[in-house]
Image 1 (tube, rainbow, N blue to C red):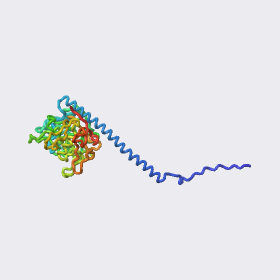
Image 2 (cartoon, rainbow, N blue to C red; image 1 turned 90 degrees about the vertical axis):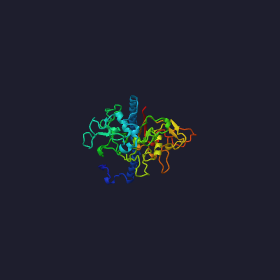
Image 3 (cartoon, rainbow, N blue to C red; image 1 turned 180 degrees about the vertical axis):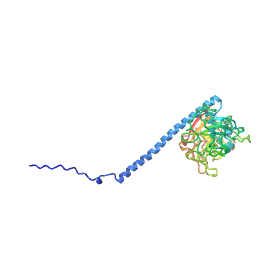
Length: 386
């Protein structure tokens, strides 16, 4: 007789003998994850910067278009103050109103009237005052006699009170941290002055406006400051660095606190920008020519020129890029960073940008660096006006 046996249950290895990941395998997985993160983070940052650059260009284009409409209607470039006033050393030393703010007020409103008037709330001296948003300021002082205006920051961007060409939200109208401000109501250090035009990178948009009545033949394209009224023989220029010294002269602009200009107490500290106020006047003038000059219209300084045009026969711009030029720092958050200057200067020399239009092979300036756009620097330029 055949004997049957009960089936044995399948043997199971104790859980303590089950195979898991070895230390080497875990390290490999961690290394792969770290590698992927290292690859993806720069890619994502690049995508974000590209999106911000697109948004910045769109914002600046809107401002430029609004400026062109304003010029068509009013037969002048937008700006509530003159370039000679904004570019003065007095403005830079005492109040530091920016041309960008002057343009903003004409396009987007916010002007209540002359300083000392009765329109709107009186300027405040403490943060608890109901009229804390109101400021009285001008490039040559805070009184109406010197051209100061009463401005309500809460009305700027609404299109009311003198504007109507441009409407902007609170994301664009902010007070840039660490701007090179001097003025504040009743010496209140918390008062910001006039709001700034802020791009998606969190940095102020710089606007240069061409000075009126400057002929192409006089050869003076840009200087650091406008002429002193006490000296009528000082030449006027098309552009003045001082008109945007509020931003370009900052030693810690924006939330990142980047040094556009160097520490004035340290002569060797030139700052990060090629438009730094720490540069020698002649070097700064050269850089302003390179950034603001139209490369399609060069001219040569007459032989025997002196002063700012000490390099006789050198090329200078006969025309500006446009009557109104808007500049954003781009992702670097520095206006034309010196470290990206294609013409790397020798140690100890100012990192200037030379005006160098397209030339023939026999041109004496064929060794200069051509600056046809801001691509090499990462900055963004939009031309506007008419």
